[in-house]
Length: 307
Ligand code: PMP
Image (cartoon, rainbow, N blue to C red; front, side):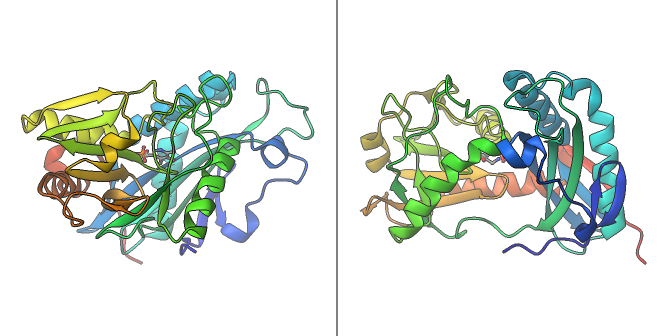
C-alpha cells in the first residue's frame, strides 16, 4: 500500500485525510461515477515540479464530456484544480517525489444511473511515487479479460468505475505469477496494460497501438512519442498483433506510475535479450529528464516553505 500524505484537499478545504469522505449514498460510491487522473511531482531544491498538469486537466474535462458529466467544465475549473494541487503540496511540504491524485467525485445522493447534473466535488491527495511495476523489468500475461470497448465503457475516459476492468485483469496476472496484464481489445489487437500504455521496438521503429485500439490516451505515451520524434526515431501508431509483441526487439510499458518499464517476458516468452533494451533505456532517461529538469518545460513549479 502506498504511503499517503496526511493532509488532503477535499471539497474546497485542506483537512486531515481521515476527515475527507464520500457518503455511502453518493453516485461515486454506488456506481463508480467519478473521473480522475494522477500526475508526478518531483521534489527538489525547495520546490515541487508537477508534470504536465494542463494535459491532465484537459484529459479530465474530456473524460467528463465523453461520459456526459456536462457540468464538470463549469463546476470544477482548471483554476480550482491547479489551486487545490498547489495547496496540497504546500500543506504537506513533501520531501521526496510523490504522485498527485486528482479526482472529481459525483456526490449526489441516490440519483439513479445518470451522469449529468450531478453535484461534483474535487479531491486531491499525494502518495509516494513508488512505481507500480518492477523498474528493472516486468513480466506480463495476456489477459483473459478483454479491454472494455469504446461503445461499452470507453477506455479513453478515465472513469473510476471502468477500472473494475483493470482490477480483474491485474488479479488474473498476479494469480499467474506475472507483474501485470496485457489487454487485447475485442478485435484481438493489443491495447494496453492495466494502468500503462505499451510500446514495442521492431527493426529500429518504435510502435504503439493507435488511439482506436481501446486505450487510455496516456500523457506519458504522448511524451514518449514527442521525445522519439525530436530524437529522429521513427514512430508508428497502428494496430498491433500479439505475435508482433512476442517477436519484438524491445517492449516497454509507460505511464505516470510505471514511468518507462522494460518488459522482459510475455506469456512466458522472453522479449529480446530479456534485459532493458537500448532504445527503452534512452527513452526512460529522457522521460526522467523531462520530469525533473525545468529547462524541458511542462513543469508547474510550486515553492515549498520548510516548517
Ligand atoms: N492506461 C491506463 C489504463 C492507465 O490507467 C494509465 C495511467 N493513468 C495509463 C494508460 C497511462 O496514462 P498516463 O501516462 O497519463 O499516466
